[in-house]
Length: 79
Image (cartoon, rainbow, N blue to C red; front, top):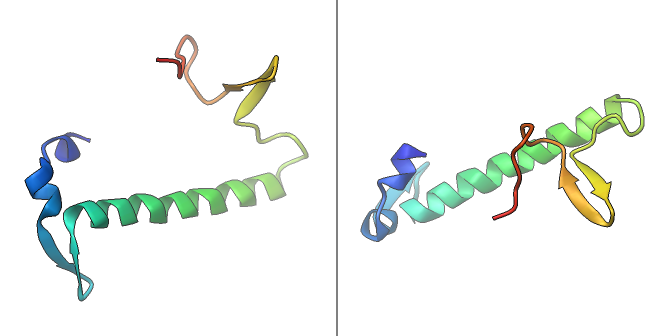
């Protein structure tokens, strides 16, 4: 995160050639995040398929609101 925090608008707009394709820094970062998000989904699907039904849960239905189970105790995702 520290590396990304140092990038300003000009740095994000800089052109790069990555794997033979011309792109800008912002697009390259976006692609990497999107790519790994897809792999995360694949891993979750495999974990759910291999585990007993209901064993892999990320949220609890708390009165109609999804409460994250993956946050450390005492931490919230509310602003």
